[in-house]
Amino acid sequence: MTWSGHWHGYGPWTGSRDAYGQEALRRPGAELNSEQTRAFVASTLPPLMNGHWLMRQNQTAVERTWTRAVGAVTWLKSTYEANPPAERDDGGRAYVTLEHKIAYAMDCLPRGVDVCWVHYTKSQSLTSFSVVCCLNHHHPSLPCPLPPACPPTPPVM
Image (tube, rainbow, N blue to C red; front, side, top):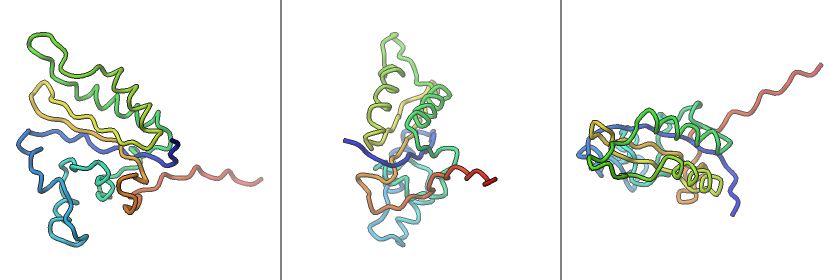
């Protein structure tokens, strides 16, 4: 399956398990202008559905908008490295390796599948960061919050 679009990166969000569990702030209301939707759009908590990040135009940034999957995956990798996961006390693996995460992201992003990485950090906070496909398969009616810039046109001589 071929998907044509671009990607937006969101996060990282870092906070407590209790904050992450505030589901009311992690979903929009049924009505666009409802109090629930306004609270959702103003919140920095990760949405329950990745595609809903696209509703948060104020959290969409040019430097986290890509037209090539490799740019999005590079951002995921650097964000992961800046917020490494906690290690288990017994030395066992708590999460899949970064290499596996990168391979998965490189496989699914070009097919239009969102990627969300969430883990506990060494300080026992949760961190969450996502790359969202735009336009989104699951939310096709949500407009792009920040279309990628077109390359500048060279001057005619």
